[in-house]
Length: 171
Ligand SMILES: [Zn+2]
Image 1 (cartoon, rainbow, N blue to C red):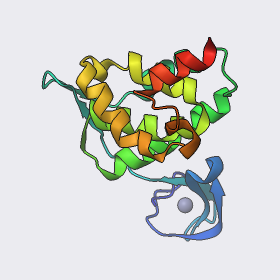
Image 2 (tube, helix red, strand yellow):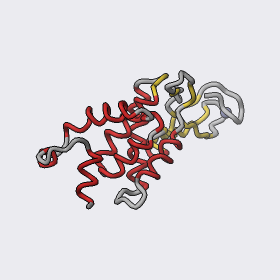
Image 3 (cartoon, helix red, strand yellow):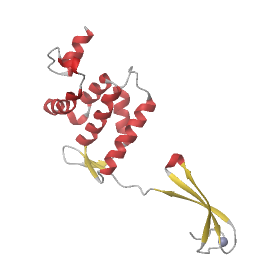
Image 4 (tube, rainbow, N blue to C red):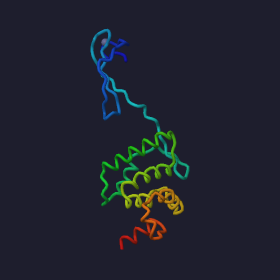
């Protein structure tokens, strides 16, 4: 790294530590010519991630949209904002492994898979309002993928779907 004081191209690292909660590495460097010190931060290169919608249009992955959808889903539910934030972290991490392009469907399924472990009601709300589940068949297909993991007790009452059993439980 070129010295900001004298422009010399060589330095030595005198200290190196994790920063920003592990998202970067902070290095204290000392110029080999003038001996002055300066700091550099090393971060993971941001890999672009795009989401393809059903109509074929593409837009950059927007974490805040996922968070907004989740905040609606957890309203009056015992799920904290911190849990939502952690959930979205994990979703984003998974999606970035599939980068540069994922589908809205993939985003939805990743969210639902994790949300289901947190809260059943929030899970169903998210599934039913999630933009990509416009068609009921999609919704039911995704539920079909996820539902077999349910507690055995729940299948004993001949449920037709989570919506039915949940309503029944409420009455
Ligand atoms: Zn220097």
